[in-house]
Image 1 (tube, rainbow, N blue to C red):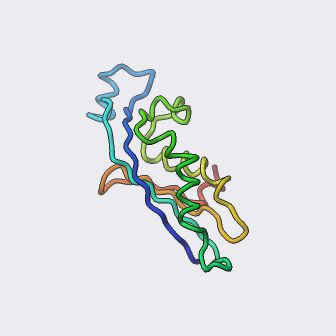
Image 2 (tube, rainbow, N blue to C red):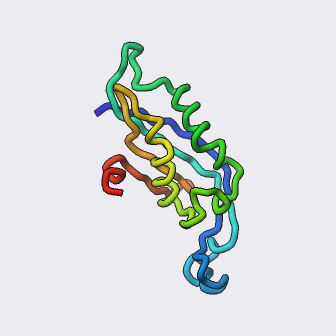
Length: 138
């Protein structure tokens, strides 16, 4: 299988908390992440497929345009908890990977390629990923 990956960076804030709990209870569960805080996120978008007549799976410029249009235009410098995507769930790296995959999948399917994986890096050594095989089960 041939694949390509493009990495993007964005800044965003979030708070890990369950709405039905008190601040103290949320702090017991989520620690300091129960307070609003920010990350310099790295988003990796991976496509798989075959090369076209130009020798690529998809032009990296086109991939960049799609990711900016459908994700980064809303996520960059946002408080993630305030986005519609996270009104009913906590914006953890895991939930972000799944949500971003679902946002991009309809726009990253072509005759020779498909969206394979999304990785959301909260920090240099902590990330979550969502892959196409999971999407079939959701």
